[in-house]
Length: 318
Image 1: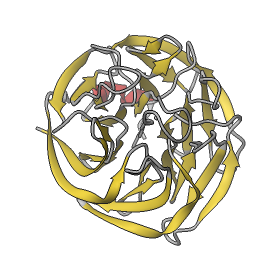
Image 2: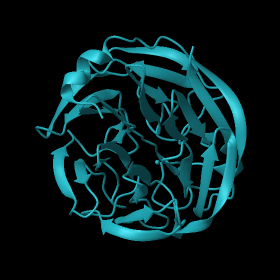
Image 3: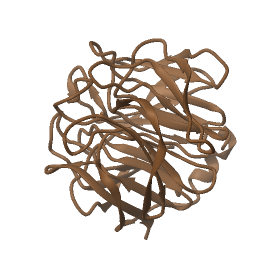
Image 4: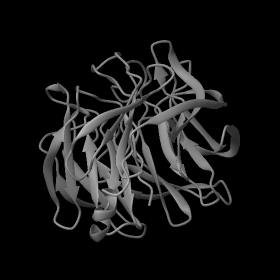
């Protein structure tokens, strides 16, 4: 089971950018303890990008969709990653966009929301076999700045931004079914980092009405209940997360609404909410596309103080 989350950028074009285990398996989460993560550069993207959506393909590759380029414009590009190699695909999104997120459900990749000048409500289906992109559904409301995680064949869209207001909803969607609001956050939340641990969705940080949040929340899809789990060591937004080696690994992010990127890699114990620093990126980075491929975390692109990046990093348990 793979859980993904990514976030948006700052300023400029688009959406007011300030971006399968069972419950019983939770006992396994305690058995291995991630203590250190090493980071290494393994390649480069065809072009610098931030705020892109990312999802795994069935053959071990990753799909990178949309984002913001070095000219601060949204892109419709689709790029596939295989280790440190990146290949631009012939297919493209129907319109340029950023601040969306993606999940793999069955053999297809689905992209949720996003935006350019305004926020979008579409759910797009990308078929890796044909490179075709079609609309598969619609969210209840336009939603950029979302975070997405999947359990089985259901994607959970956490928070987001309508273009005017932050969202406090958690929306569940399964291909062929209508989207359903299945939970509510304590407040509207954008740019959170999320990952699935056991049968729960762990939600870390984000931007709420009070600024940058340090809250760690736990959402149980079985009950629809969101409960406080703990606190990050500092407020954090525009970060990304995956579940690896018994921990929710939170990669980079911003410590302020605008700028203040961090290189810190954090690990959250999903049972207790305890957090420890387990590594550092080569440079402070937010808004990267982060996904798990085997036992390695891939970090593609993102934003540094200098702007969008083209680096592909591999994070491995040391």
